[in-house]
Figure 1 (spheres, rainbow, N blue to C red):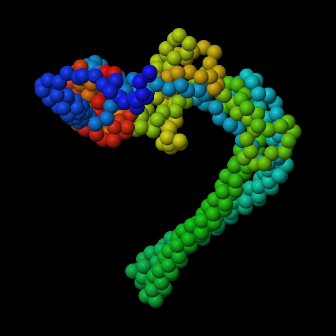
Figure 2 (cartoon, rainbow, N blue to C red):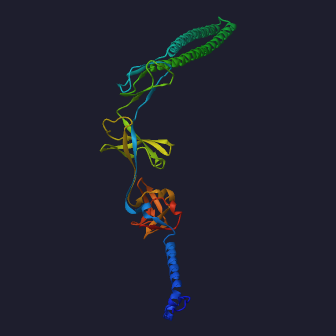
Figure 3 (cartoon, one colour):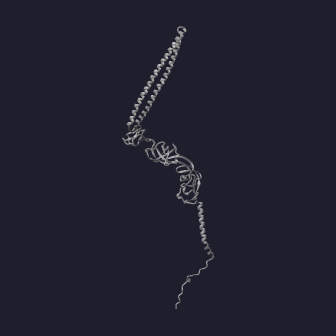
Length: 430
């Protein structure tokens, strides 16, 4: 007979567990707090290290670092420019009219050669009219000069007659005086002779004064007429110059440049006709930054490079005007110039501003403009500390260090605006 059914329990699954030692129980109870404390301590150490080495970290590959070195700092300006003719005047129409061209662009011309003619009937007619006026005024001036001579001659005749009358009166007085002394002439006749002498002297004085006045008056009128004629002569000479200028002539040996007027076209006064290029002398026109323009001066030494050759040159002109942050300057060849130069040809130039021997210097970078040359971040052992410095001369590639840095130190020359003026930053990858 089978045993009666019973309800199963978990007694079959129970097992006897040995008692845990007290030391193990204590370790198991204190291990989590110890691990948590170690993590907090590591975090504190990381925070303190981060605070002492800079609050932020920057990748060294994204910033530029340069070493402070000692050497010769050459302040120079390098720029590309275009070749232009040192003398390239444009000839203009002196008056409106019909232009007849005698040359085309590119023609070689000689000094004094007629390049174009302008037919201006109005100007030529005006010249004829003014010449007629000059002839009339000159005739009046000549007539005034003749009248002055006649007036002086009449006055001179009257003066001579008055002188003769005075001499005759003086002789009569002397004769009457001798007759009175001999008793042959009465006293009253002597008195009359004396009155005659006085009258002759008065007439002589009056004749002298009339002679002077008439001479001055006649001379003044003649001079006024001559001045009017001279003024009109200047007008005629100016018109004659303008008529002569209707023939546009080459001012020197050269080449015709741009022709700006069409053949047999009507042009207005002062309209450009054509330009003449002096092929004997070329210059190089360059653009330099405004910050360097104040250091430029006429006569500064320069070098112009054409192909593989370098030619000595000097600064010949500096524009006083700033356009788009740049200033135009011209460089003239000092001795010889490259053969076969053409206008608008591109060449490179270098202007030597100054040379400083054996100075501390570092590569130029944006830090100079951003900090004004007064601050720099010095890199030491993966950290960059901000330090006050003082800069001196500046070239295109380097800047002189006068205070705050030593030879061999390294600084960040790229922009420092990303550091937010922090005193210290960390540089990773250094």
